[in-house]
Length: 148
Length: 148
Length: 148
Length: 148
Image 1: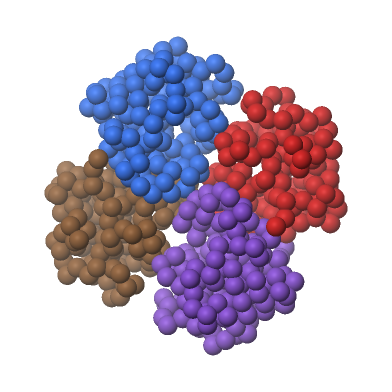
Image 2: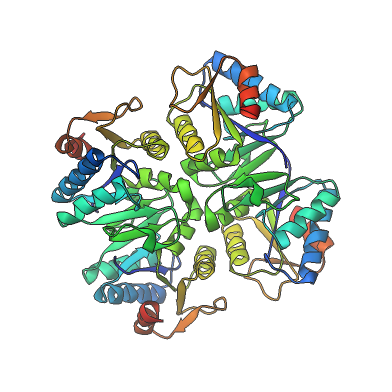
């Protein structure tokens, strides 16, 4: 069974946040982890692009029914049709989550991940709920996601 | 169509938080609102008890399949069988949410409620995500939930 | 705790099927049962209209996030935002289901109801999966839904 | 983006049904398709075993939160925590479904697949809802799933 790590964050991120996401995706793929994300744009797309650039595998857990709604770097679109409730599937599917800057959707995924006992690592976030493990750079984020 | 207001918070609350929840439930019922909650114990049960004490109607949106898992003050158990993804159903069903002290489950409901554009009022919380409307007492919480 | 009975069937039914649904809704309300349905049109609306005409209470378990998508006879719109996965919530919430003529959505609800051990009564259906209890008229359907 | 095909059927199948499932899994992998299934035992496990024996990739869409509940031939466990509502995710994620003998869970997946406009192919089934494409053997089932 493969190691599945989610990268979560804003669908309309700053350039800096997108660059962090892409680097995290790249490093996860180098470590042999499978990238899990929400399958759409912004952080989800940047992380998937990074993972593919390093030969990784990507899963996009989509809110709708159309696999074509996935960004072009998603290998495996999982169509939930469940709207925002798909955030719970992302949190549950991931062995650990790496959270970048994001808004309420990201916060819901962090909270659900922590509720489920998943490790949640924060990278480049101004503030996070208690229980989120801080990381100073993509390398540390990936290391903490994989090894605590 | 009736006005549905959710009360969310800890399943093992302090006595003070439980008392606030019960008073909120009572006031909601007096205003003719239907109480929505997660159907289990703690804040969910206290709010439902309060609503019933004032002749209100209560809906419990349960994580499992067994209506008997609902607390004794639930009139209408909605069995989702969806585990924590039911938090999204609570957030979506409520026209507004009143959030008491809680943990990660509560935080996920707040985040999903805000994501969906539902009004979220915080009562007796040490801190809340931006976007949560503060209330100083149950009366204010109910007023803001119903009227902004 | 109230008795919740679902009425399921086509969203574009024949006049005959709609009339059966309305009569079932009326009889359920007379028995004091709460009507559960998918909240939209066709059989869902006819059953809810019948229930309201007899002073009953109606719950609509909606696929989307907008309570205004419910038909005008729904008292309590439960917004799942989960698309067709909401069929599982209808099946699980109902103590028993009365199935009229319908298509694939109805069939999925029948199958999920039977999987969950809910009693499923068929009324006016050409054919049904094994396990569905036949009823010859609305009175019998309601009696079997409530009492087996 | 890869082609995802679901194989669905009984969790306690006959030897004959299990052999069909394994052969279908093998053939799907040879065609380069990714196997989607419910991740547990019976038909789900046989199909995944077949896919792995031919070097394929397997996704298990699980009802619970524990990836270790997946059968040993699942590469990518998607933990929904949504119980039977995960059947809707299986149906929506699959570009097409191949249905073997099964019970109510299988029937719900067939119905949801047809509702969503997914192609559903029946193999070795005594009877199926209208709309299911019949196949006489695993080769035909895979061909119809992939090409209609």
